[in-house]
Image (cartoon, rainbow, N blue to C red):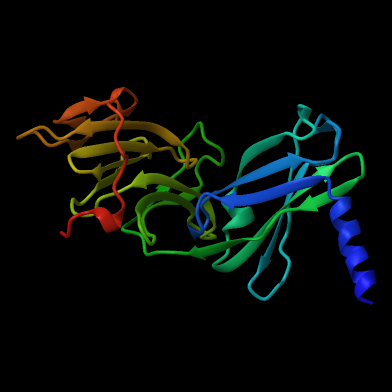
Length: 282
């Protein structure tokens, strides 16, 4: 029996065509936010492998199960453009899975990625990654009507702004809900926020959501969310001595008054935003 088992294990490893690894951008998610997943593939088949292409089978699948082992609907990812996995080569592919397909339910879930090998007709499975999905009470919650020019014009929706506290970070999110069904249509991470300064959040005359919040000491972010949940604008401002940026509503939207416009792309490189654990106590 032992010899038989060893032979089976050896045969299984001998026919493996890919070495794979799955990593997630993080493990703790706000309900409904997109999931960013990276799949690393090493082609050990001994030959170049062409995947994707118009009309081909999905080259990548994500399978989900809950903490009780129940299988959820898989997510298939295809590509209209074929690409080659070189023999012996290693590639990394990062994909975004929309929230309703990955983080739409509260609880603990697990996901694995499955990569298609067209020569053998098999899918090869990665390691399993854990997903923790939670929700938080919104700090802003107000209704609006979808204006002309957007899908489902006239429909009643709600904007929410939510502060989500992870182990070592605090992130601000914007969410758009259907006011009648309470369905989470879009949940959009906006970036880190320092809660020592109260953010300014308001719906403007065009029914866009205007947000001005502090991302790090003396640095403000002005973000506009459109009625479809997409980001319409994002700009940064520095707090000057005696001139702090503030959001002023106008007849056509809003504008930031005070401070100094700041372009992070042109700023000297730093260590980035400090984690919550590294910030001084308020």
